[in-house]
Length: 345
Image 1 (cartoon, rainbow, N blue to C red):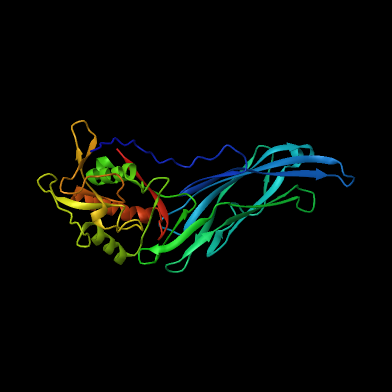
Image 2 (tube, rainbow, N blue to C red):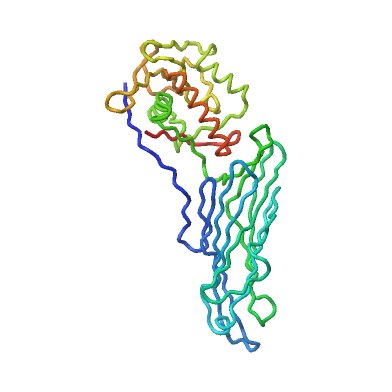
């Protein structure tokens, strides 16, 4: 059989783009770099009296366990000429949101803030989403920047924009009472370390890397199945009495042996008849690498199998199953949503 050494994968925190007026995202945060608004002051005769450039930046971190989040906002007068250089600009920034959401604190600072060249105004706004029990809300955050030059009327700039990626908030966990929010356009990941989850993680890594469907990879993500009754049926079909070829435990080879299936029973890809799976025995060898061996009680592995059944100590099987469930809530992975499975060393 084959052995594999899987590379470590480190989750990357969101980094604000250096491109002006662009957003950056990860699953749990977003960042706006330097949205630009330009003001030109004209005389009644049409002559340019002065100009000003305002840059707005913002950052926010979402919570998987709350429908409320804060966004830190900063407006800076980055360029000024003529009368704008002399007087500065007054700035008012107002936030709003859609779909079962309210900006409970819509302004990062009270009223209009007068800024001279190089000065900034910074503050926080607060959004609150409250979708009904068992529901999902896809929220767009919106912004309105009003800029005026003291001594002139009317307000010279009314710049508006929206966050191009929605914030998804749901109450589909913890008995449909707990709200949490994520950037749903960012595909979630389940990360499982072989150092922590042992033979369970090694089984999943083998199946993802070597079996024909590569479930859990970028090319073929798995999909969360939320219904517990169907999960039980999937587990029965693959590892228990529903399999037309029984899984034979090997307690002398694998102490506390149990059947651990991949794709998971808690995915729509799970539930294949266990007779069709590759039955494998992961073993951690002296070289520090998990080697995957053929189960001689089962047909030879062809790598065309749609699933794997690993001989995994029950403690590792249960721990990995707990991680899958916790990750679903931590990442707010809802029914039918696709996610990646990342196996690390």
